[in-house]
Image 1 (cartoon, rainbow, N blue to C red):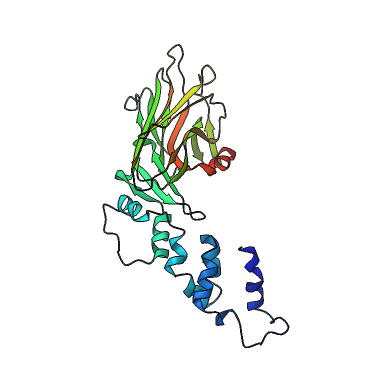
Image 2 (image 1 turned 135 degrees about the horizontal axis):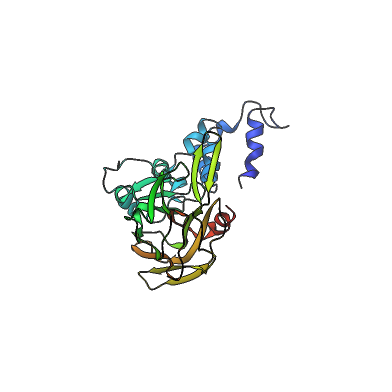
Length: 290
């Protein structure tokens, strides 16, 4: 649909096609008609066309254009995300969409929620300091290290441990749809030097002995279990923990997610734990390629 409108953009700034009066142009289209067209485009296309002329800009503010881009129960999302502050009640739908697309911190900054700008789907990320990590307070095993490679500006780094367990819980009014859950992990300690990025793999060991188990359970009885070996050192990877489906947008979903390797016959270490990500299930191929 967006590509089929390209001829409009080209002709508005150039010569008129044969048989069309030179005094007419896109600016003469009624805003209501333009808005009907914009309602079929994705948010990025709408914003690009809004810069075309005054008619398109005015049409891009129509509430019904953005109503279809917002989650069905978006006010429930607004109440959850902005419950600790006064959310303006007079915002148009476009401004509400823009506010929700901005990463918004909740639960004391341990979680971030946002809408994907292209699809309007909900994404949620939990920082490592919002996860329950066995032994995190013992500096012999774990440490917090600052890094620019995390949206939360720090990660949990495992030096060495026998019992590896990381648990995450979230209670959130996810809109109806299918979702996937990932842990963002990195084998090796990342640091930055004046000559570039450095990955220290000195402590990486034990992950080839036994697979790591990922488990997911939801408040409505959904469960998922998967296992895999951690082997890709030197880069951030999204390890898939499981999927779940939300059928009722009006209800709050409770999720419990865990990552364990508790075979105490050997130690394991050298792992950075950044965050837990909940995103639409259709993003799985994209994240696995990263």
